[in-house]
Image (cartoon, rainbow, N blue to C red; front, side, top):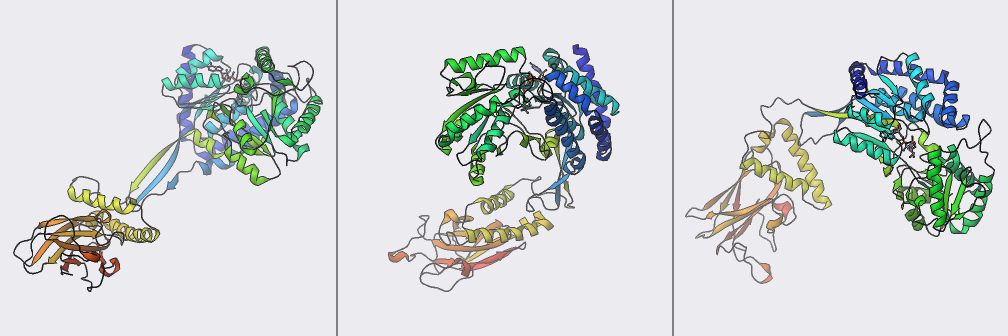
Length: 618
Ligand code: NAD
């Protein structure tokens, strides 16, 4: 494929996508259901193509590739419409009165999907179909190692009569794949090895193209001594050697609790020896990896043996199941993905050690835990770094169309399957509707000191840590404030608070004032006050007016004192009795000790308020 034809492909896909995105979901479902039905009708030919390309047993092709694909397709047929419906999201009634927020799911545009060779139908069609349901067009790059499967996908898409150019299939090799990336699709979905995936993502990043990576794995299985041993042996043998060990979520590293270790290892070796390797219906493992794959496997196994590993199985090391024990943490098998029928086994003595061993790999795709104690199983599954985990099962958990799937670390990033798949192939657009008829919003121009102070007070209310009772009061106050804001935020700001402080005869100095919105710190701790300060020096009059400016609605209490010597604090004598005149809102009766907040509380609503406070000498 020339660079021009890569460009042409993407361009054609782009025009098809514009019409497809406008197609209602019911029509999308009708069109794509035809593709599913065609796959179901042609399943035997598909199995033949998969077996020809990969050498896997026909049952593996029918179950792992065809059935999983059909189930995933039907899941989206039934659910895509609901999952992609625009959804209302919440908002703060205080800051967004009369507003509505909605999230809409939009397609990226043209999705370039890379399929790998090991499950060539499922891992090509499932991401492609998910992209299509989300409204994208797809250029599907099926692995060049599976040309028969690519041909049959193209043929089925034609016979299902999908809109022209909506789903284009190619088996371009890696060089041509780069041309497709450079032709600027809008999204890339890559399934394959970690090194190739990173190269694709790096290239995409230079063009600003988002990419989702489903990469290699080195899955751990943790077997506790309390497991159902027979089931665990069968499960691990299947998990390690299914599809010749060429499963991204195949078991590669097995950790067995020490009391069970030797017996379990012996049972595994016996069971592995019974597996039938070859071609046709009655084989368990099909053709083993390609020549280049075999060379890598041989080198990995040799490296482990050189570093002290023990070969537990007998026979030619690469042509059947291989079980190794005592594999050094320095061995390549402990650090790299091993894409073949090789299982490394190790004993552990504690749950913590098992978790640490399992998490020691850079890969974190799947995992399994084997125990009769489900509480322990859940606890361990939570502690593992992997993107998924099965308790008392293996591999097939990823075939549930409802459940998200994907890896962490060297195993990639992003999720698909289930609702997550549709979201991965979508961009969220958030729309805010304001139904207010006000001329202006509180944050619009003009800016100014009053608004600043109002906001500052609000932040104080909303975010300063307080006790539970105060938190409840704060909620009630905020509800009142929100109600006031709902009618007019500007009006709520306009409530003005004046303190008219009655002075004792011959007063001198300045009046100190403190305003509180809770009992916390009342009446004298200025660090807890919502406002505090000093008046100008008192004059000849008997009243000192203090303007506290605009106050949001709420409950407050004010305290004042006459700072006669202007030392900036209330002087007190023996036993803490003030030496200077003091007062508080509501002019509470003189009593021993400071007044209580609740005795002094007053309510601000959206009307201006003027309070008279008498200063008295204690
Ligand atoms: P691969 O990396 O060789 O190829 C995957 C796809 O990438 C193919 O379509 C291939 O043509 C293309 N490709 C390869 N090199 C490229 C490059 N440099 N630039 C652009 N495209 C390139 O992988 P594979 O051998 O087909 O599949 C096996 C690997 O895939 C294993 O590592 C396995 O663990 C992984 N895998 C992961 C998942 C998963 O869901 N996480 C599933 C299946 C397989």
